[in-house]
Image (tube, rainbow, N blue to C red):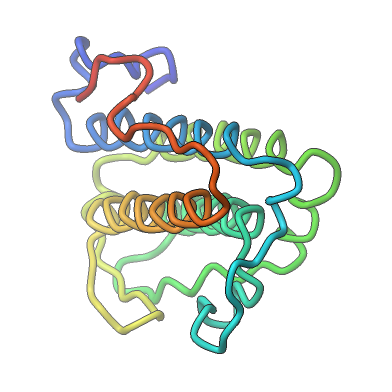
Length: 187
């Protein structure tokens, strides 16, 4: 499957992986709208800082920038790990401090967009037999198929897009409308 095939009116969108790829790519592009509305001085802003404003040990200073980088790093790690995991393997939490550090160097948005392009290439090449493999997610010992966890990855991004939305609203910034996907043809 090539990336040009990510048009929902083509046959690819009739497979579950094809639908996932279209909808995941649209959700990532939707996230870019929130980032474009973030005033630069609010990227590292923390509206409230309590011990509860943490996402495990992977994201301890929750900012708009750190959430964006967290999503990109987690998806990059998961995309590769899901593409090669053996049946019955445990999928580890997406810890990669070196990648997270590299992602924040220079233009962090360009770095994240490049990771997404690579992820789409990895994900679009996953064969059907790999999608059916079962694994356990180390985060909570839940059992998934690779395809099922891809939808979990979509949910992870949607969850954190909600976090970005709340932070933007708390900073008195304009937020985009959800369902403003581009292109408009969905899976």
